Image (cartoon, rainbow, N blue to C red):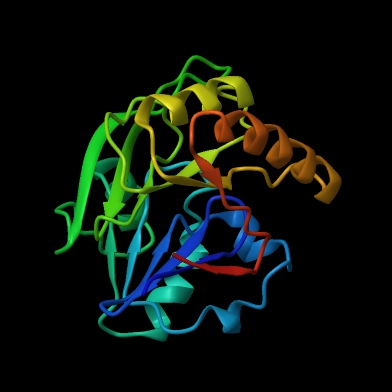
Length: 209
């Protein structure tokens, strides 16, 4: 049995018999007060898709590392270089039971496209970071839905192309609750036509898959 807890935005905790993996410890989860950080529980490893602050806040990573002496942080070289400046070691090889695909972040308004590592954990869930470029997915896809580098329409098409069984909406911290519900509903109605189920997990809530 696997559980997925959504903290906020793109930050997820995936728990299976092998332990708990935290994806993308960004500033919103750490700073917003929406989540009681002590409720996160025991984390075995951290996977970070790319270097932007909404996906990695060094103070959050340090807080996680200080709670458990044997926690390992995994990411690409750009994130490793960023966190090295904060005295945090990052492993760039994939952990056991996890595969990755190195792609580019979608172009942001200033024209930048930093490296982005999409992770698939235990054949269960794929977290694409901020990219539409991954070529495959696990049965569950974490799907960015409202982003400055794309659109809900493009995100839905991305999901249709990869054809997971289920998607979990992420990347929506700048929407209020009503806005998130509206976007979730749009995605749910459209993706149902392609046989893809949308599992909405509100901030702090957990789903079992």
